[in-house]
Length: 491
Image 1: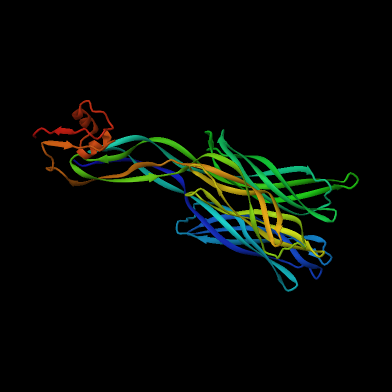
Image 2: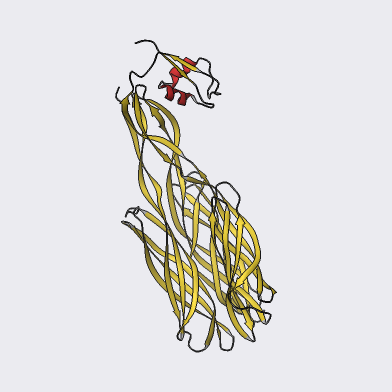
């Protein structure tokens, strides 16, 4: 008997690719002869477009570098330079109709003297998520075959993006000027519902300020909330979201009579993210023929659904490396631009990396800056936990012995709990070679422990109803000690 199969076809959206790319961007500072050394450079990078073409994604951004230097008298000053850049990444899976979101981070930043100027070289890493339309087809009915129909949940990725403004005012006692600011935004919660995405997070702000003749570091955690309209965000569910700082400004207003400084921080944030939209259908998950070998093609999808977003705090400490030669003649003045560079292994649950910062110190009346590095390894326990962001909230360094330094830092770790939602369905069913004439009058099936009614029917090439009738009062799943005897009448 030939098979007459009917299928249902539908379109959905899935993540096509995740691409990583790096580019090098340079900024040149010309200070003249009055600058003896660049103490620190703070790079801030923001995206400026991401477009997909055939086999290629083009992206761009803007790098703003703030340099703090010491003049010949040891007095610190600041300068700022910006540079726009474009780059691309190739992948055979890319097509013009797809949508891409780009997340930019500055991996490394080095400074070297080039004649009378200083050249800042930054390595920019782009992580690009590409989404595209796809098509799925599943079996809904079949004459001439035995099918197992079950309710299955099919999902489609829904992407969203938007922007928001954040502003914060606070007092900084005794501060006379602000030389540098470094900010990092993280998302600590993201929920869907009622046609909008509600985002909550924190901005970790680090300031280098002057209090009299002495530089000081000021740290502040600024909470924020944002709402993005999304028509598909109807049901309450969690979503994955990334926040980036597009533009940030710090303004200080000094009241000399009261000895107070009022600081205003403002930033423009951009967000992009995704969540899974599920719907339930009745589809065949397996099929076979009673008188022939059926050719069954199965399709398996395993989307990751965000169930929870966790915010963890870990304190790390130990010996740290210092690029410059440090001894007891050095006086530590301030630590600035602390950042975490790390990787997370989902297989082991270990977060490994290092906290880097710039240590400003003085020796024999001269001010210098050097990079320090504190390695760390943290276990992030939990099934399905994936670290999405790491920020540094506080760093201290001391000289435990001459030439040896140790540091202590507080890490703020944001992690998402992702639960796989695998689903398998029949996407193609065809009749194979005939097996007529291979049957016998009596068939004895020796089942395995835990064998289901469907697997027994598939092995016997009988419908589940016929097997259940032949087994009498046998309960499925089987224990493994039963014997199923099937008598076939002579035709």
